[in-house]
Length: 620
Image (tube, rainbow, N blue to C red; front, side, top):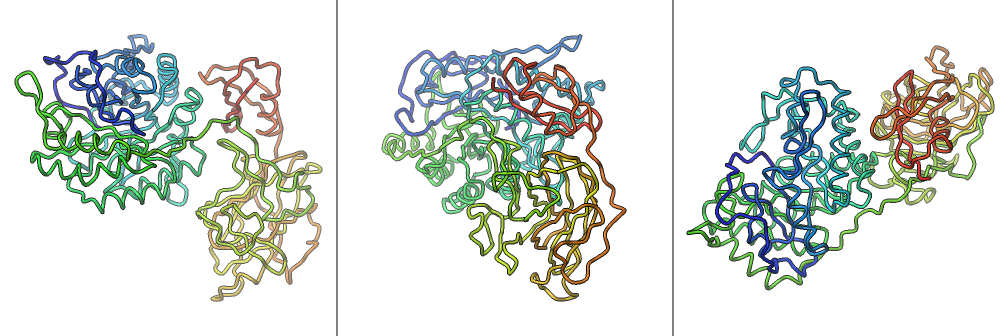
């Protein structure tokens, strides 16, 4: 977790592991690992453990530096043996495992990223260094098995768990981030962190995972954090849920488990189940330790907690954070004591050896990590784009595609609360009404997308059939990521009456460009139902009027799609070329189908006028 303040001097008996022994978990269904000791791999390491994580050696700040000209340098086999640990695991592939810890972390990052230590650092330069860092790790370790992609980024109170934007106080009161650093531009360089309805979206974390997936398509990508089984259990769940909903390729959620001292069996198991049930992806125990001077109390915590870790199928692996007492980041977390050139077991290690010998076959692992597949775009629900002029039924949102950015809807609810079988299997709440199916139970931030085909460029009047019980409901429309309406208020049915069967119409004008586009309806004010939207030529009457119509909004600020320049960059940020298109979708299609780009990989297309950027994958 935090930087060990221990000396990294070589100690007697510490050397690269050369003696072959059967580790405690050999032959089991999951790994049982540990970390380097005082920066070295002890000669007895393989006697006990079949997975290794360098305590500090693979952290960003331990490897990446720059010379006087600002050119990146990388030290792979530093004091804590990042490369040596990787090679140790590679000696017995399939039997031994290596986890890279960690690519992005607000602590122990390179000093040249610190605003106080390097006043000249910028967001753009930070992004350059991040790309160079990812590329360098991928070149050195192209076949990583497990990666802590992002470490300690939960927003908890007034800051992130570690000092991404400013120094962060450790709630454990063990230590604090380096106040002299002053913060960094990591968040901004990776796309920021939008707040929607008061909730952090963690865009920068999503970007980091997308970058990792591009470089390691077959690795298990892990988000790792602490206090996620105690103080910030709910914040951690919300973060991972948000990232998964937004398309981040996270394979597993790492529980550091530094916060379990004294936690009883029932509490531990119920909290683990709560986390797993909420996020729905495998968990790792990544940094387990019990800081307890009393041998019996430490052993009791192991007895209460470890069997559940080992025997639960969705716990994919266990890493204990140090095993030699006096050589761990927190006092009294070791499982063995050094005595007269050898070691003696504490009660926890004695118990652990006995438990593993008697219960090796109880270890279960049914974790299924995601298979990387080529992205597939969303498709019109009924096979063809919805014609405009024409009627857009709210429930006929597109069929989702595959991969990040290819969703066709996003709802805040975990399950369909509607009473209709229409679109069964989605999480959209669809209800049966006299007029057909409608979308209800709309929460702020929900959105739905529709592939449309606009007959000709011009101004259109939209008639939307909506019902609300209050006066705070609203929505807006956008096309290809660009707003085409201001916020449209949804009138209440009757004052003080909660009636979602009494529909009203709201009218407003929008400007559209001919051709195929993605139309998005975004809920900006919760709790209204929507039946349909009809698009007609400007000023034409509603073909399906409902009682007395509200006036058409004529002063909505519209943005007509016009031809724009788009710059194309590769994954390293190198400029590839410039093209002109009427929309982002058209630009993406041009890049994907162009013979100009020969090399496969991910490219970024940026609208030169507004800065909007999207990725496209070339699989030639």
